Image 1: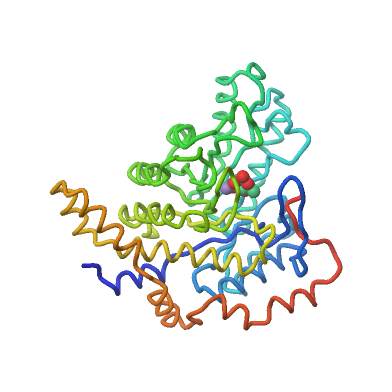
Image 2: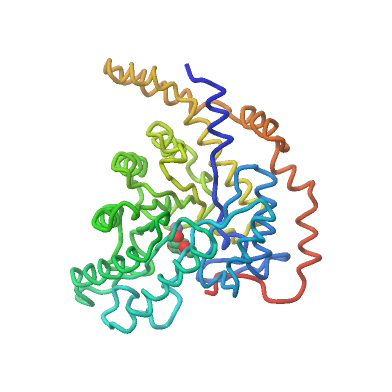
Length: 388
Ligand code: RM4
Ligand code: MN
């Protein structure tokens, strides 16, 4: 039997980190649709993030993206966050939007471009020192489009060298989270295409280097929960970039296309102690809200992660283990499905009431009046976007 008070305690202590870029304008490579009331600077993004935290009670951390969140005083930004009950989370580097990086950043054949790329990563660690962030999140667009374009092994050597220099710069409590992605923008080889490549680099670098699983970055049909379980066993799962996809890296609201997959992932997390803060798994969102209102979409996403987590926590692990050991295939599967098919919304409403917030986050946000306030107040200036 599952202990309901332990389930509730785990749900109350889970932290879901929201990405600053989700509050800004975004789109596809075809069109960015602007929305009224969108933040014009990192401070206004934090104001919006505070609304998400107020509505959900579990989203007090905000990841930044450099240079999208460039500001001249990161310590001041961090103070501004604290005054709103927030902290600054992962610092995301950007080595994919500069003309110099056409043929790659840290894997570029040109040593001057590699130097520039590594300097950017070192600058991100300086920013982490100022913001108090724990994690440097690295995603590289590096790769090639045509067979023969560059040497696969030499590019790995350049990667290893660059990562080692940045790793050496990390402070005692800082980590490097290395993301992987199957393809895009490179269409032939990608230098960090899968978890195995990321894992191999992290293993060589040391304990502070960890793999991050972006749920949109796999080939269709990939068993993501297997990767999660394996990495947890190896103590190499640094965190998630949650989002949902139907086709490729769609960056839709987490849990929207396949809530069952999200449950299966969270089951491995919960079962393998991944919810304990000391395990160090960061539950981050990495999404864009191109056609839907951004703040309520982020609230919905946080709720989707919570629902999958609650169902995962309801799995009767004793019954599951007994069925597994007895070789009772149908019963083992039934135990898992019983948890998945539980309506956890009343449980989460109770959790929220016990946290002292509205049991219905979407209704609470609607009632706050924030959506119309930002439309009338944020007039003029340049709206934040991803600079594409
Ligand atoms: C990449 C990757 C990174 C994110 C950027 C915006 O595809 O997922 O995590 O920082 O997009
Ligand atoms: Mn990502």
